[in-house]
Image 1 (cartoon, rainbow, N blue to C red):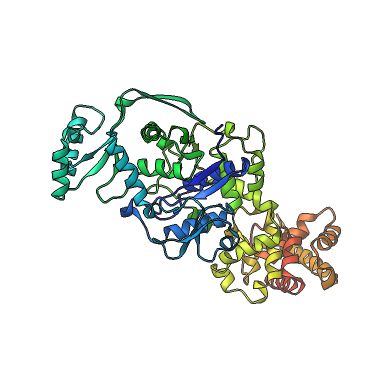
Image 2 (image 1 turned 90 degrees about the vertical axis):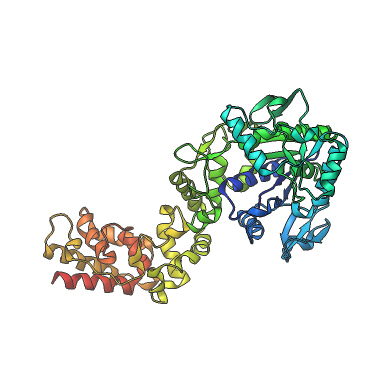
Length: 513
């Protein structure tokens, strides 16, 4: 374990919506910071300006806030309440006017740190550890094609490393575009990953990667090493696809004389689709916002992505965020990628909803209900908070998503119509069905408004039914709902209320006349 104070960073690129894999990375960053008493930092890696999508930074800040993963340092939306209580330096972002940055080691937005990257790139050039490259994109493409035809790994051939100092100065003076490339040293590079263990790479298999692009922006390789060093990052958590880049980063730390600043590396397996391929923006539903709009609770989403990268080694599967922090152990990280299964997510979410209060479900589901036609067309009485909470109480144990409230039981909101045959229990005829509905009606009429509770309704109806429960309860349930499947008649009558229940029974009796 590194002796430095634990400082981890979630460092997404603002290229659109927040990927569910990004949320997983943020979660593990958060858990490590909280478990080890460290800092959780947000950093915006926006050096690839071609891929930047407006509003992305604001969206990712909102997603972290929605998920309950509060970070200590980084970009905050202006007006964030954490700004007022911070004892750290506060500066206005130059790039994003609606954002302020909080912390001692900022700016936390890469496009505002360009001078830093140039400083370190120039240092490497001056020490002979990096060099100017003036090759055109056409030449580089031709080189790659030739190497591919010869079945060689694509690598830069160091043509520009042969240039003299005078040739370089002349090209720069003439305004020729250039990049700065890292000169990979000879030898082998060893490192240890927390998840995948000891690694050793032959340096001659590595490419002289670009450190600084022709537009003055750094590549990921340079920026991540500089930023992680200056921000005193102790642990780097990222997807396993970055594992092959780790030797390059370690060599950069060494070239810059920063061997003592090398963090611990924790590479996580990717989330896979059902075809065992990495979840893709093109093929799969991968946006955190997509899952939120489908009505999955954040507790269920976070719990599920945790289980796709970590195993508690017990029978436990359902955890709140605070329980995740309490039980988290780096030694229990998974090596293999987990398949993202929407049905499994629904099951995990259902377990969390079962633990929620009716009040919380009401608040979370209301925004979805307001978009449903059956709700829009309902009477004001059927939109009341009291009425909706009764429905939620009845549906509570059957819900996997907030969008499901009322969806399977639309008869609570609207007038019902049906064929009389639906009222009949097994071989009962019209006469027997009518008699049983009359019995149910009489029982319900005797229950006062003050006693109109599920338990009382169930007790009195079951007493009347005796041994022939189906004869009495089946037609009553059908009369109240007009549906073949529904909650129990006691629950339905309780939700509908005395007046509406008796009205629907009368309507059923008319059908049997």
